[in-house]
Image (cartoon, rainbow, N blue to C red; front, side, top):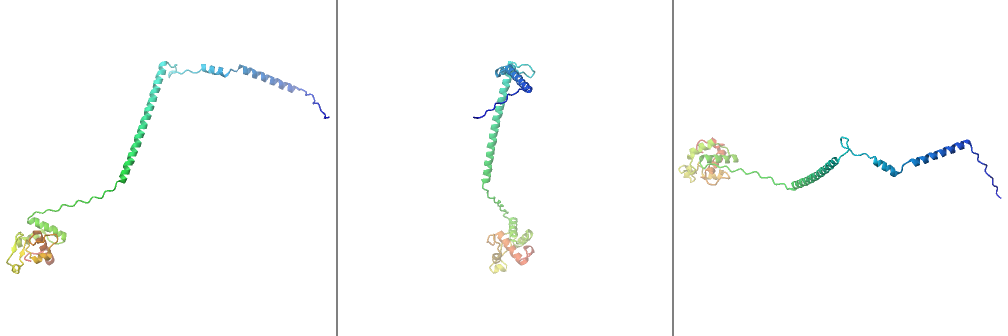
Length: 234
């Protein structure tokens, strides 16, 4: 059989007695505190009764009129905010639409084909009087373009000596006339000479004033250097 050993009796010391007393004292205090503490419902009610009432700017309690004014101001503020939001939304839509329109215009400008450069307008043709002065001036214009030397004075001087300014003048008595090729026109040119020194762009008619003058000036340029150097029959 097993052997059982009985424990020794515990001896309570003075220290143990003091500790037990302290525990008992603490338990009693906790019980009293629990009993004195109010419940949650009671606490909420007490706080509710002591809630701070709203006051106006001057520290006095709000009246019904003050509350009505505050409500009106609140509605006005809300209305103002709503209107501002609407205006902002409209402005944003307008800005977006403007940006889209600008992009559309830019695309059209980029896509537009370049137009061909316009040709310079042609200069109006010069007009000259149908008289001796006009014939000399028009002949000088052609001579300048063709590089044929001569001046107004040189042409006019020789014309007056040879034909007195008559484009249909004919010499029927000199050696050329005897040979069957009379001198004709303002500068008394024979047909073979006219055919050889005719200036392109002028009529192929011996008695035409412009054709006669330019052919004679061209012949004189080749033989004398310029019509200006001719002072007698040539």
